[in-house]
Length: 152
Image 1 (cartoon, rainbow, N blue to C red):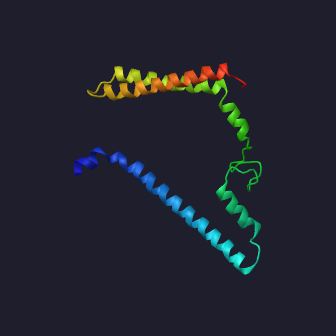
Image 2 (cartoon, rainbow, N blue to C red):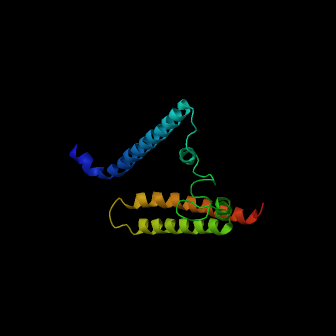
Image 3 (cartoon, helix red, strand yellow):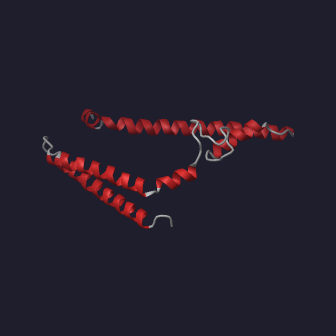
């Protein structure tokens, strides 16, 4: 059993992220339940709930709405131009940029597989290099297609 924990110590991190993510979701669920209970209590008394409470509940459900508490800005003070961002994200520049970066990472893994000094380390590097090369080829094909079908 000691060898198991010695070999797989790194599993603590993904398991910890999973546990903290589940805890965060549980707290968000309890927070939304408390808000709904508060709205139910207002409704049972025959009063209208405050607009801030309704806005908070609405913002929790749809974070992408333009009428949030921040107005036309996101929570970091940047303008919300989601459509413009999507437009620029699919331009040929970004497609070529992704293809070049992925190709550089693939080249790095090919070099690492050739010059791996430890025995048995060349095969995992080659496997990752093959996968990254296929991903880079896919991104290059997407870049070529984004240039061919530009503006359509």
